[in-house]
Every structure is written in C-alpha cells, then in structure tokens.
Image (cartoon, rainbow, N blue to C red; front, side, top):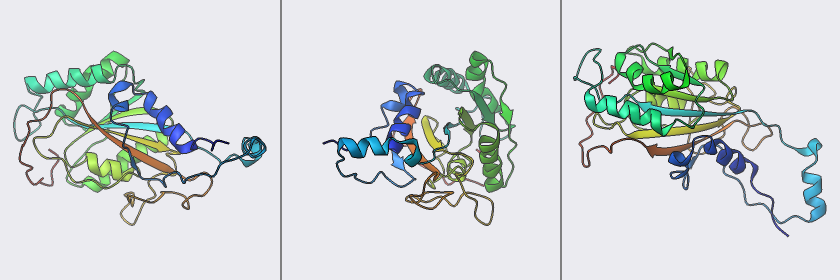
Amino acid sequence: MLAPPCRSSARFAGALRRLGSLVLVAAAAPIAVGGACAQQPAHSARDSARDSSPAVQPATGPTTVVVLVRHAEKAGPTGDVALSPAGEARAAALAAALHEAGVQAVLTTQLRRTRQTAEPLAAAAGLTPEIVPVGSEVPEHAARVAAAVRQRHQGQTVLVVGHSNTVPAIIAALGGPRLPDLCDAEYAKLFVLVVRDAARAGTADGDGVAAGSGSRVLGAPPGGPGGASARLVRSSYGAPDESGAACESMAAPPR
C-alpha cells in the first residue's frame, strides 16, 4: 500500500514547471514557509477512494508564482541612472531565462534601472509594466507591491523588478521568509515565490507588512483547510556575480 502524494508538494512542483528548467534546477531544496507536508500513513484502496471524494478535499486557492530580481547593473552609483552595458546584457539574459515562463504581469519601480531591466521581457511578452513607486519607506512600498499582486494578479506568473533592499521586503510582504538585503555587488540572484491563495497570504502585522516566519502558515490557522502558504526557491541568471564581493551595508534609499 502506498501513501498518497503530498498535495502541497504537487502544487509547488506544478507551479515551478511553469518556469522551466532554470528554476527546476534550484528546486531540489526549496525553503518552505507554509507547514511542511507531514509524513502520511499508508492507505488502503478504500481509504484512497474516500480521500479522493470531493466532500473531503481541502479547499485550495489559486497558485501565484512571483519571480523577483534586483535591477541589473547600473551605469553609476547614485541618481536615476540607466543600465550599464553589463546591465543591458543581464536584462536580455532575464528575458531569455523567462521566455517560456508565461509571465503575465511585470511590476517595477519608477526608476530607470528597474524599468530597463524588465523592458526586454515585457516587450517580448507584449506587456506594459506596472509602476509601483518607491521612496525612502521600503516597508510601505513592499506592502503596495504585495497588494498589487494579491488584488490584480492572483493565479498569474508575475515578474517583480526591485532593488537590493526592496526585493527581500517584498518577499516577506507576500508571505515568504525575511531575508537580508542584497549586497551592492549582487545582481544575478533570482527568487521564485510560489504562493497558494495569494489573497490570504502575507497577513499584515501592525505596519501593514507580512509577519513572515520560516515555519508558519500565513493567513490561516496552521494546517487548516484552505490555509495560505508560500515556498521560496533561490536561483540565478545571467553572468555570475563576482566571487568574494564584499557585502556593503545598504543605505535607506533603494539601490
């Protein structure tokens, strides 16, 4: 007698298949934010038939796949600068990496380096990027991006291009783990957050940002039917970052 497959793992794998081999390579050890699938006892054929009955199926929401990257390399250290030649090459690499991912929406900030990073993919997909302005208040910006994903793009595959200190905040706002800011020299990292029932993921705490944790289900009682959950995969694309690059402390403005 065989135990039935874990439903949440099946949904996670199915969502990642939307992104092709780039992410599947990194999916061997995903970070689970929702409760991990508990080991299930073996079932008889009668048990399996009963489990497949619609009356006992747990409620499930749509699966939203959010791909998050920092903008590509920029031409200068300060100001609203354009991409450097290396950044233009990375933007093209992002479009190539996600060309079969079925991206249905693109979110950027108002700054040129994020818009130019998304431009090749958006043009190839026939999409007009949505601009979510960013200022000095990163938590508020992250909350606005998360709200845009939940309210307008639930069940879709969404590309979010942000900054070294906004990408981790957006991951947390969508129900993922709280990660440190990216280093100033890091551009190759690509994060995929798979969120089931995005309308309930990322339950806000006092400041409106998801109270993310490495081991809790956000937006519903742990293990409860219809509970929202998110899982994160870390990958990379384009030219690798310089090895051994020092991680500078991030200033408050987006970089």
